[in-house]
Length: 280
Length: 255
Image: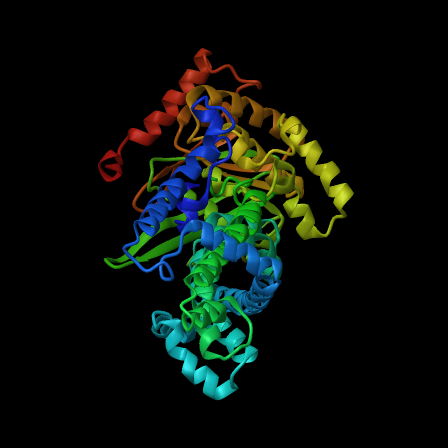
């Protein structure tokens, strides 16, 4: 089954369940091991900040960043930015997932769809998402609609590619077995092709979400939306509020971590890991 | 009445180097509930022939009839067990795999699970009904595959070296189990193998094939009482006879 396991980019964020028992360590080993790199980076940061090489405004101490973070949260400003950004992210990503999986499956199943879409997708995919932004803004106007559309468009590519690969990688022996047991095309698709391609699809969705983040934060400034983390970070530059920028970056990191831990990892543990198609 | 008729079936492979005959003018018939083994060295077209009977390949000449009807593509009248352990669907439990064919037939959930459990009992795996394939050993996975192929009650069971990738001890167990399953279910079985002892242990009749092109070389009826004793003199005599057929004049082409 090893040949069916696609590479995943998010390996760094994972801690394998049972890893603690492996080396006979106590329950606190894993959290401590995970915390060490953060402690090192934070320590260096604090050291540089207190050295005073940079002006205090441009290189705030951790304490100041934390204070700003808490203050912005308490005043409801940060939650409002987060809310708007996450809403756009979900809308754009959902669009990408729907369209991307549909096109990817079509390409994997039909030779003609592959001939039509593959050249288009291959040419459009490597173009940086932000390059499309001015075009989208002129066509669809400033605001949420353009932003969501662009996020959906750009993050659909990795989903298309991985779904296509996944559908093509479905083992011929499963298809033969299903056919011999009387599966028609529709049920072959639902009961064999989809679950068979799932490991790749999940990888595609993960990459698509990362792509969606990248383009969304950039486009929030260009699209002149009144709220959003991207807007907050860039807006803070005008006033040299580096602590606000850092608070925004921290918020993005936390949201990404939550999505990875509580959405993707759970989805995987419940499906492909449980089925032995991918190891945790 | 004949259950399966294979009439002058030929198949040619298109390769970059030209047309290569895979199966050449093969004919035989089978009675209902007969256990037939196709034996031959690799490349003799025995798996190709099985795939033609299964309906995955169409012959360029000749025809196959099952129960009087010409075979045209795959169908639920034949159950298939492959050599590859990966044939099971990893996203379904053992029970889920076995119910698949019944689900395709439109059998209600409670009923198909009851039937599937019966089949798993037949291959002595009812305790593992809710395990996923990757938690089962190779021998267990092949037993699930047999139960899965039997569950929707096809009249014919086609088996392509199902135990070839197992270790010798497990293989012996599997052969005994398959002989029991066959005695209980009375399916018509075509079983492909390159293992002569396996053929003598299981088959009513053995067809020996030679390669390049795949042809029927000899037919040997095994008239030993069941269950068979692999250490008896008669058993070894049959093995010797089959080996003689396999190694005789066409040795030069086989290499």
